[in-house]
Length: 118
Image 1 (spheres, rainbow, N blue to C red):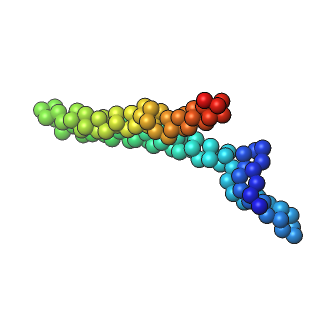
Image 2: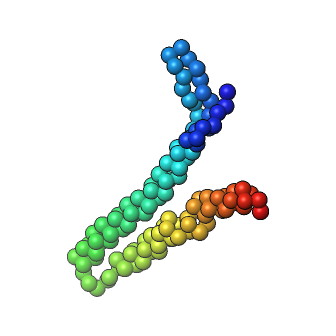
């Protein structure tokens, strides 16, 4: 028997000799997964940023030790910085404009329209 209760659970309830239990997913599970995905994206960016800072510091030391005649570390920093900037935009800007967050907002807006009768 399919059930839906006040807690947002939608699934099947099973009766067994030892008691009954529910099998399925709840909306809170979906919310948790969505929030976790967002946190993982942000943490991925911060790991990328910390790796950038660490490696660039090491390369700067190597560049200084090898001599000031050919200063090359800025080109590596520029190329990697562009990639880091794209990562930043993807995580913090485009996701809210074009990603799953925008999709969620649009779905909620459509549901409100339908529930309000318009």
